[in-house]
Length: 220
Ligand code: BG6
Ligand code: MG
Image (cartoon, rainbow, N blue to C red):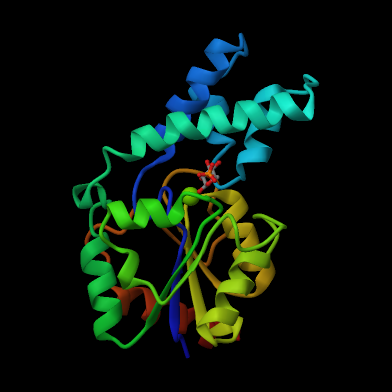
C-alpha cells in the first residue's frame, strides 16, 4: 500500500533548471569555459560539485578555485531565486498536492539542492511537506539511493510504500535502486520509471496509484 509521495524539487515542483543554467553560464563566460544548454541537461539532478566537474570537462583547477567558483555560481543562483513566487509552481502541482493530502498520503521532498528549503519557502510550500531531504542530508548524491532512503526513514515508511516523482535520469536511478515506485516527469531520460508523464498538469493522484497497483498485481 502506498503511504507517501516523494518529490524531486527542480523540474517537478518548479522549474529552476533555467536559473541553474543562467548562473553556470555566467560563471562559464567569465572563466572562458564553453557551456551550452545541451551541456546543462546533463546537470539535472546532480550536485553542485558534480555540476562543476561536468562543466570543467577534465580541466584541472585548485580546490580554492573550485570553492570560489561554486560560491560565485550559488550567489548568482540565489539572486534569481529572489524572483520566485507561488505562481512559479509548475502547472497541476497545487491540485496534485491537495488531492494527495485529502487521500491521507504523507508528502516529502528529495532534492539534491542546498537551496531546496529557500525555494519551497518562496513557493509557499515549506509547510506542506512532512520531510524535506535536501543537499545537506546525505553525502552520496543521486544516482545513489541514499537521499530517498533518508527521506523514507524520516517519514517512517518502507521503500515499497513510497512513490518518487523525478525529472532526472539520476533521480529515477536513485529511486529504483532504493526500491521505491518511480514516476518519471518530462522529456529527459526517465523512461525506465514505472510510469512516465509529461508533467503533473491534470494528473490525478488516484489514477497514478491505480496504475501502480495494476503493475503490482501483474508483476508482483
Ligand atoms: C538539483 C538540480 O536539484 O540541485 C541541479 O537539479 C543542481 O541542477 C543541484 O546542481 C544542486 O543545487 P544547489 O542549489 O545545491 O547548487
Ligand atoms: Mg530535478
